[in-house]
Image (cartoon, rainbow, N blue to C red; front, side, top):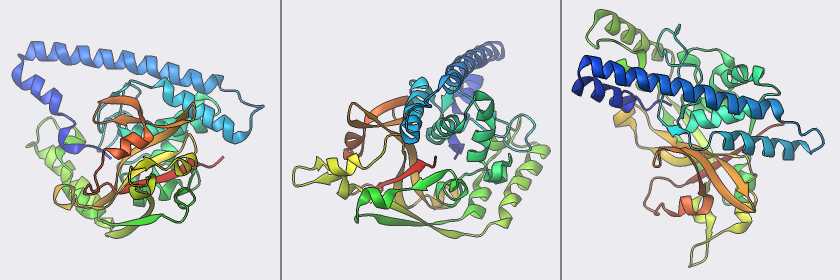
Length: 325
């Protein structure tokens, strides 16, 4: 989901504090650099897809290897929230359908999964659209904005929830009421790339976007998760190695915050705050993700990542999905 309040902050600051000529030059240079990086990363990523040949390996091992290779190809890419949309011809969000120079947590995971499902790079864009949009229909309203009621639900044919198997009887269930209609009312003009927030055309389009939410009703969302209390054993809080061993490399890991209190800010509560991939290297499990904290795609030790959260934190655990293949 887009990080609406902050997505244009840097560009706005540049335009305000630099002369028009200098500002245009800086932004043009940034756009050129982004285009170059997008092309380089895309070529590297597509090469992994097109050269992946694991015909002699078991299907699960082949997919694990492919996810590792694809996700590694984009290591170090910059974290920037909310920079994809439905393309220049879209009614609302005109950001590119796909890009490889910047990612947020979910667009990174979606990109890797689409690549993993692609036999050739020619299939990538179609597979990405199938993951990102309900029934692959490219439209703002059809986009899988919310993990619990959109993303997981609309990708059940591709993803399987194995959280109960990982938790081994210790799974909990997060509940949140997702109010899409109220969320639509909170969307601002940054979504629709208005030249002027006060223009009549901008206000008309924004009103139309708000009205798109009228078809939705608030609904409860339930999501199983592995509690962080199950991830560590004993008084010395050592990682539960048996549990970590049950998490397959290549899994999608979603950080769960039951009934995460965001209603005052975005119109609805949620229960997922971040997404990543689990990658095992030499027997050690890591999270490979587009990190908002480090502003790039990195690996972090799985157990150490979650150890930073205190019992008082709203983050209570994680959900585990794997690709069906």
